[in-house]
Length: 222
Image (cartoon, rainbow, N blue to C red; front, side, top):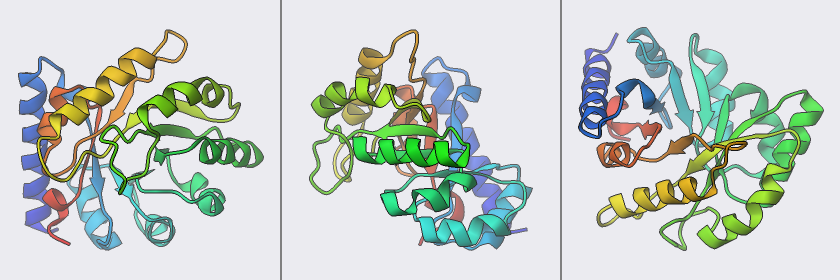
């Protein structure tokens, strides 16, 4: 087993605990999703041996090739998903983070029903209004949410965002949290907030992130 992966995982877990405790939160309310994009199945298997179970892949084709090679992992798809790849990925992942349009959500619901599945999804929100990123605009999600919640074969469990690469990410994380609080109801509490990556996950935890997506800080540079 690579001692560097073990050491990095231990360090990330300590940082998660410190950030959660500083925010007055239970560290167990934060899930670490280890992003294994471009790294081989052998590296993922080392992380499993070190106690990590939840992994994220960005690209469907890579996920299709890698997931069957790993024993003991649970998987999320965290990257952009094209509708023509929904049928292939649904049986392999527990959750899809980047659902960024009503059309994609409808396709996931339809295909999930055909496969006898009820996929868990997060709605990606472009809170930074960044033209380079996917996601619902904030106002667009407000308008689309009733239609999305009416889809019969998906479970909308929360929201996801990617902040701007430059500058302080905290305002974007806070904006996603406020939007979730605004949209959540007793019937649809939207408990999950997927936000924060290797360089900024402590700030995301301070704004109530429940899933942080950490790759290079665990597996090394790409």
